[in-house]
Length: 203
DNA sequence: CCACGGATTGGCT
DNA sequence: GCCAATCCGTGGA
Image 1: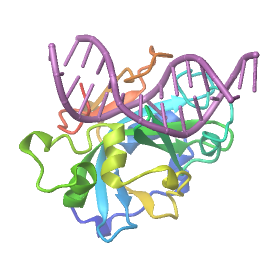
Image 2: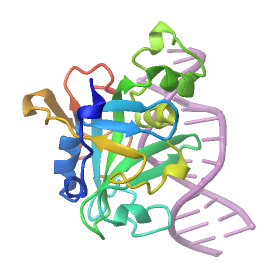
Image 3: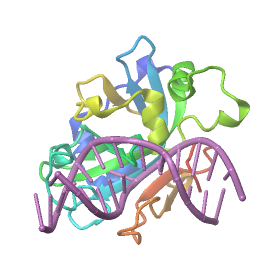
């Protein structure tokens, strides 16, 4: 895949409805440029969150220091720390004041795979069992790309972490299910993933 | 100040 | 399938 021919997604992409953005994020390339090796992966699994009525969203409780970036305009990175161990990253969507975002749950590695394995396990090549274990979960994605608290609020339109445009994944290749790991608003089918992709965290 | 729980992961049964 | 690890954000006293 020739990444140099792809263009960066603009603010207008992110400012739309969170479910539309979530679905269209599938197949796009997440890139991190601020190390010697360019790290990149195709988004294969996402979940949408909308604090206006979705109790599982971090913005449901109103604005706090932790979630304030989610209340801004779309196109920024919301990073949070959870379970005392893991970072997870979200793409903020919509217009100012909405509190909506898309959780990046899994990537298919495209560039910098060796560096990603070093970030995850401190070694390369990986054990055979870890071949598909590299970026198949939200905590794993952040670990592989080196995304931490310091990346909170990164501007995806102008910053060193961004998304490259690719063709939409056709509807018949997208699976829509309930979200994973939440206890509230579990009835919403707001998780999307690319059918038969081995890097999806689970069916 | 203190208590509680979590948008997960990895290891063990 | 089950569960501990581990610490920060949040809310109540």
